[in-house]
Length: 69
Picture 1 (cartoon, rainbow, N blue to C red):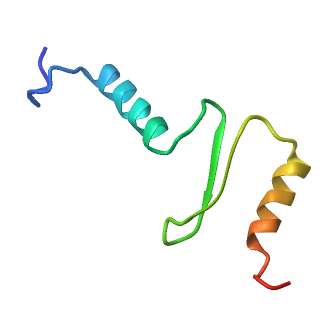
Picture 2: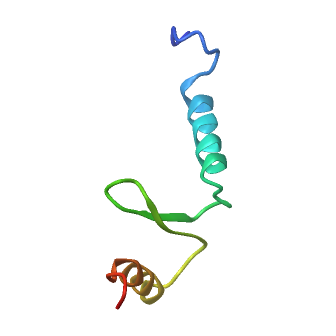
Picture 3: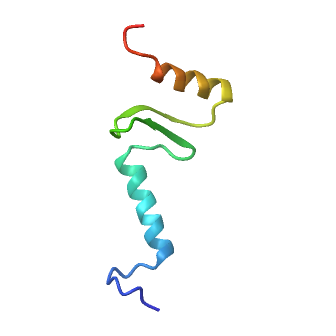
């Protein structure tokens, strides 16, 4: 069955290619990868690996603090 897109990729391999592109273009190391960004899509923080709830809360609070405090 053809998707009609002409790409020669089925849905699963297309999704894998998209995920690989996303990881590459955003320089993500693997999973879990986290990116914290604002409404304008500016990356505020990025990290790789598991973190405790306390570590995650501290990272988010640090990014949300107004500059100059």
